[in-house]
Image 1 (cartoon, rainbow, N blue to C red):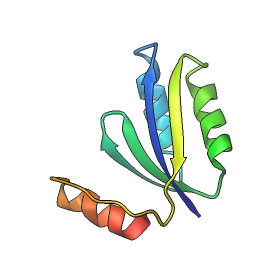
Image 2 (image 1 turned 90 degrees about the horizontal axis):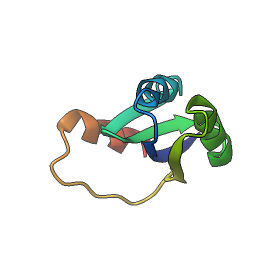
Image 3 (image 1 turned 45 degrees about the vertical axis):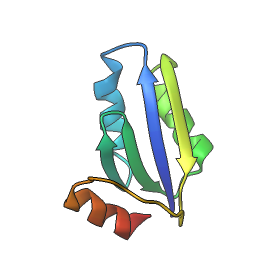
Image 4 (image 1 turned 180 degrees about the horizontal axis):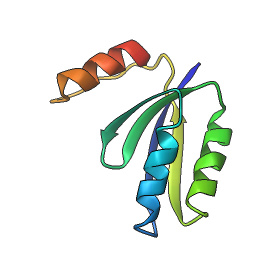
Length: 89
């Protein structure tokens, strides 16, 4: 299973809710910040990108980065999020 960092900015305010709902459909996810998520899925980064683009009707910008087994560090992240990251990245 792959772990992806997903971030975005959208042209249409109403698309934020739809995109959040779509991201929550992946098998394992965490909302890191307002527009930054980490998801786990068997899909490729291109497929995740395409699924998210469909959700927002192409009105915005999306970045999907594979972070599977990547080194990372945090500062002042809450304990629940930190535990999720330790388990899933």
